[in-house]
Length: 127
Image (tube, rainbow, N blue to C red; front, side):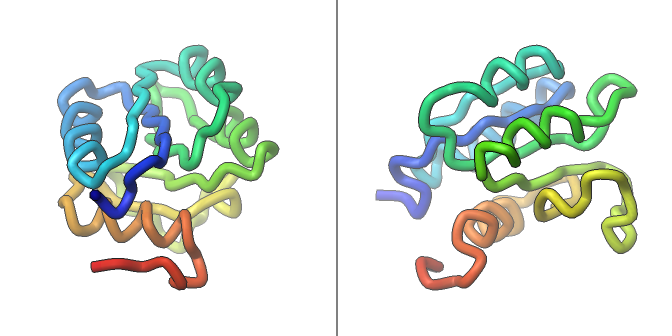
């Protein structure tokens, strides 16, 4: 049983190989993963029943994912923003909506970011 067993996670990522990599990492941890490759798909998934977390690339084909992030935020769904760019001091619009992780992912960094976003107080942290 993985640390994310029973959790449903939405990934918004426009780079197919990066999406597959994140999906593999999260699936290995026990999560059920749904991938969106564009903003309209992600907006649809934001309305899906029982979403536990959204992993959102900041830049999707030249557009920011913050409007979609707002949809998840309104439902009190934790968000982890991902970017291949350095996220200095979270100085971007919408940064207050969630945690941040730099790409490329490593299994440990992605696990830690997701687990921390799901349980910010650390009560359920498992190693």
